[in-house]
Amino acid sequence: MTRHSRAEGAREPQDTGGAALFDVDGTLVDSNYLHVSTWWEAFRQAGHTVSMTAIHRTVGMGSDKLIAHLLGEERDTDQDAEIAAAHKALFATYLERLPALEGAADLLRTVSQRGWKVLLASSAGQYELNAMRCAIGADEYIAAATSADDVDASKPAPNLVKRALDRAGVPASRAVFVGDTVWDVQASAKAGVDCIALLSGGIPEADLRRAGALAVYDGPARLLAELDSSPLAEAP
Image (cartoon, rainbow, N blue to C red; front, side, top):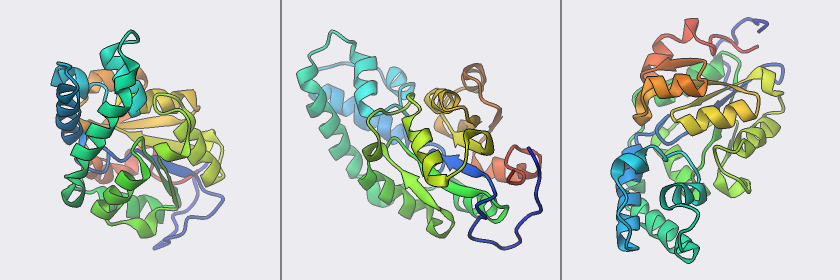
């Protein structure tokens, strides 16, 4: 990457810079285990016994892929909408008290000030994404956001990442994605974007590296502390 001088105090990255794309659940907001619990209850209400361990490993997929992955292709697909709606309703009870992960807002601010155009690329629906943005409290540093409502295929498909790149107006070679699941890493790779992975979503480092993560950090606060030696040191 060609390095440019840091834009001191800039809140609006220059168009000549790169794009830093961020997942939200488990990457900037501490919500993955809430998803595990609410998906477990949604499956239970529909008469299915699904382990929380299995559910945890699917968090980050869109709801359609998650249900298919956990119940199999021979399931009664007539239940899919009911299960997804139950999860959405159960998770909605937490929306007003979602906690941002330590360092999340400061990470977005600092990355933006270094010349990156900051975008969100989340498998959540727009309503949930709006709540998570409120929890983070860094909207002035976010150039744009994509949600599951903006694409017709969710992670690990690359559609969300590609849509974010389109909105950023930069090629994949000038972007970095930050996520916390294997599905984030896979979606990024399919879009031709390098991925930094965080352990804040609860996925083991070995799994993230095996999927192709360029670098792995404990969470947003640790990535911020080590930013100078990370792929997000300065925008290309």
